[in-house]
Amino acid sequence: MLIENLLFTFALSIKQQEASLDKIDIQEKYLKQLKENQKIKSNQNKQLQNELIKKEKELITIAKKAEDAHIAELKSSFEHEIKELHLASLQSQMNPHFIFNALNSIKVFLIENNKEKAVYYLNKFSKLIRKILESSREESHTLEEELEIISLYMSIENIRFEKVIHFSITKNSTINTSVIKVPPLILQPFVENAIWHGVMLSKKERKITIQIYDEKGVVKLSILDNGIGRKKSFEINQKKSFKKQSVGLKMTGERISFFNQKQNLNYSYHFIDLEDENGTSLGTEVQFIFV
Image (tube, rainbow, N blue to C red; front, side, top):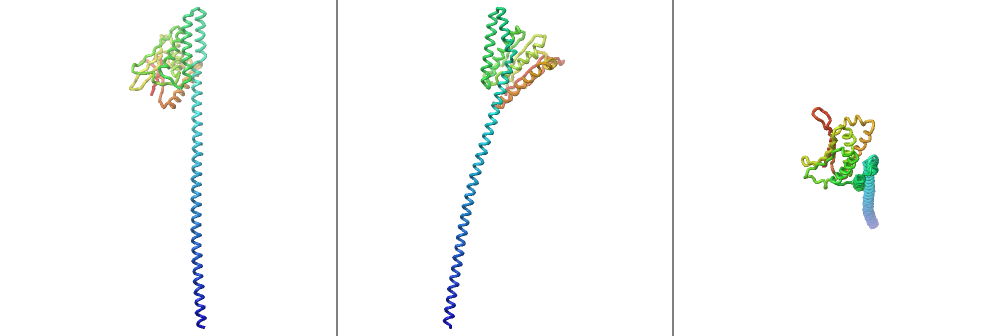
């Protein structure tokens, strides 16, 4: 009986030990599975993170391409607007009236058998047209070239008017006009305005002067006329050509604005009404500031 009890106890002990070993084995397998699951989860998280980084880079690339495309589109639109404005302004400078009147004057000289004057006039006119066409291909040219065009323009107008306008250009000797860049034909509408809305409406001696000078290190250019002044001109022309005049000068202002943006400059102009101490008009000054 005693032996049976001992054998039973021994067998029970073995069973308990086996159960304990099985439990440890199960726990070890469970821990191993947990580690594997954690590893899988970690790998999945890493893979997901890599996928997220990849997608983020793709989105950044797409956004960058879209931004570049938008910038390119804006740049193209901006350049197109400049070209359209540039072309329109050049077309407005060479108005049909000026061309017709110039050619008609040459015809008159030929009819009067004044061939010498006709040839001289035709040479001046041809040179002016050539200069204007050359400048139309450029976004800018020098102030020296601009003044040459204005001189030719005034020569032709004065031949037609039989030198009724005293025109002159004065320049400070320290200023180099060959290094100052300006939009082509930027001065012409102001000179034309000084003729038709200033001096030609005046009965006194007609004068138009262009002055280039330095004021505290800043280059300035003034177009001065001794015409009837802006107020009187407006009263006379408001029902006729004033609207056209305003559009022409507005377009010139837009051209200067575009030129400033592209060249990173700050060119400007403004009108000054010239008057004596009694407030009587002495003419008009247009002052350009090149900075």
